[in-house]
Image (cartoon, rainbow, N blue to C red; front, side, top):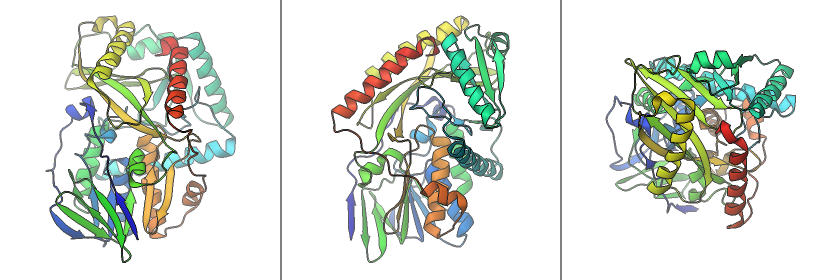
Length: 443
C-alpha cells in the first residue's frame, strides 16, 4: 500500500516568449470523472509525451491517459532554449568536457537515439522546419579564454571522430551580423526546436491515440489492490502501471528527496524587428563557457526576434518573483546591446524563467521506484534530449521491452545526496556565481 499526497504543484515565472508566439491547434480537455486505463502517464512534457508515444508503439490496443498539471507548453517544456544536442554537453562542468571514450560514445548514441525518436515524431505529426530544424549549433567564443575552451572541445571531439568545424571572427560576423564574437565551433548533429510549438505539435499528434487531460494536477497518488489511482480536482485515473515524467517534481511525489538540485535559468525575447544588422535569418549560439549567454535568432513572416538566456540560480521554490525577473532582464539587456548595438531601441517583449533539474553526479532519477511506478526524471540541464530518452526508456522498462540501450541507461547510480540545507543552497549558489563571473564577456 502506497499513499502519496502531492503538496506542491508546478508554477510559472513570467510568460515564455516561445509559448506567447505559439498557437495551439487542439482544444483543452480537463479530467472530469473517474477513468480506468491500462497506462497512466503523469506530466505532458518531453518525458511524458515521449513515454506515451512509445507506449502507443508498443501497446497499440491499450488505453493510455496523460495528466498535465497546467496547460501544455506553458510549463517548463515550453520555456527552454530549444537545443537538442547530440554531443556531450554538461552544464555543471566548467567546460563541455568529454569523459572517457567509452562513456562519451554511449552518451552520444543515447542522445542520437532520442533525437531520432523526436525526428520521427516531428515528421509523423507534420512539424515544419521552424518547429524542428536539424541545423546544428555553434559554440560561440567572445574572449581568448572562450577560444581556448573551443579548441579543447574540438580536440576532444576529434579524438572520438566527431565532425566539427571551427569558425573565425569573419564567419561569425557573417552569420550573426555582430563583431562581438572572436570565433566559433560548429557541430552539425544538433536540432533546433521552437519548444512550445514542438510540445503542442507532439501533443496534437498524440491526441488521437491517447487521452490527454490538462489543468488536471495529481493531488494524491495511491496504490490499492495492484492498481495506481491518481486523484485530481474533478476526477481520478486508475491504472496498473504509471510513469512519472515530472522532472524535479519527482521529489514532491516522495522519491529522490535530498538528491536533486533545482536550478532556475532566465530568458528574454525581443519584440519583432526588421532591417537590422543581425546576419542570417536563423542561427543558434551556445556559449563557449557553459555559464555564458545562449543566443538565438528566429525569423518568421519577414520579422525577426532574438532570444537570450543567461544566469542560473539554485532555489527550492517552484517560482521566482517579478523583481528578480526584472533585474536579470536588465542584465540581459546589457548583454544584448553589447552584441547588437543596432537593437538598442528594440524592447524585450517577454521575460521568463524556467526550472531545470540536476544531480551532483550527473545521472537521471530513473527506474521503477515502487511496484508498477516508474520515474523518468532529472534531465541534467538538457531536457529536450535527456527527457525524451528517459520517457522512451521508462516505457520500455515498464513493458518489459529489453534492449542494449535500456541496459546501459538503467546501469547508472542513483543521484548522489546533497548536503543539508541551507548548506546546499549556499554552496551551489556560490559556485554558480563564481563560474558566471569567470565567464565574463561570454555572458
